[in-house]
Length: 455
Image 1 (tube, rainbow, N blue to C red):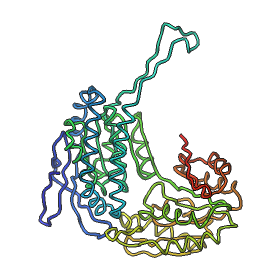
Image 2: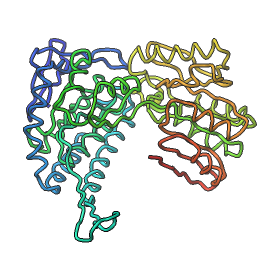
Image 3: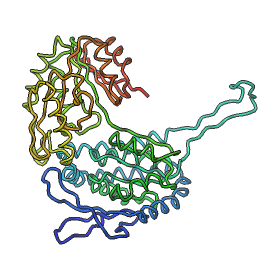
Image 4: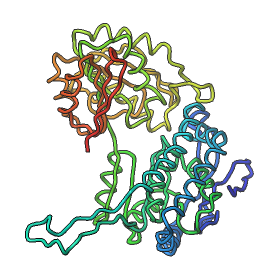
């Protein structure tokens, strides 16, 4: 990637516009800090409305020619992108660790998952076929008429991923859009933008035609609303916080939106669950990457007859967690910034003041929150309903499956849910009663996991 150095010898990441790495019109930058060391690590471009206009103009100029290419030709570019990412996996993993505080193993796995995702996207697209229907399938229709349905590009897609998976969740938006013939305006999360731009370096090396993908970085106060409301954008794909998503939905009128927002993902623990087996899985699900995952376990709805035993097991498992710097391979790492730590600390304080039992944790050093387990959480506590996006796990005791289902469905969120039981029929019954997009359940006696997606 084309970079320059400041007097502090920190890299400056340029924007990718029309196949070139360029500075913004105002020649201003945004300084980024490591969540782990709390020291500056580099600069990204603070782009202006003029820069946004330029990026969108180039995207429109390139889109029709890109769409006109044979599907196999577009596939060739994306396959090469995946290959280039694989070559730079170690370099990119180091940057992810430095910029968003993910340990090196998880960062490398993110890159490898991204490579697989891009290749999978290509294969799926190559197997997409059009559909047809005879006219006499419809009332009053004629066999002499045939309706043909084909999938075509929508135009210019604005892709906005979150900070926590700056490569994987970015590619999850870019690869399908590009494969189907769209041009893309890629706006990475500010904290995560260096990793996102490094990923685009691989796409540049793959030879992507100029203008098909352009990057936009900058302050939301300057270009956020302007970009979302821009008449040159034909679709928006956003993953991030619920409040931001709601604001975006209000601003982006009359264009298609794909939003993946927050979650308060419940884990329902039935009284027949194999507690010793599931305890490590619960801890991994709740505390990996300090809980900064939309699909992290964020509350446990535990049958009261097994709650005491499970709490003891979870406490023991939490003691095994490595807490500290991602550079040291730790699982529970500093949160992305002080504002996030302030929010999590507020949830912890409220739970304690409202009478929850603090089993372990609850302490803070800068933006590092100790893994925290609460028992006897009740419905009047914020932690029962609000998404912490941090290493805090509340336990709510229930007396029946029906009560657990009611509490799970009472949340404003509906992203993912988990069920722990030994009874397959019971697992499906609970899963089918939940308002979640994806339900996973663990059947430890059969040593099997299953998932039930809901669309």
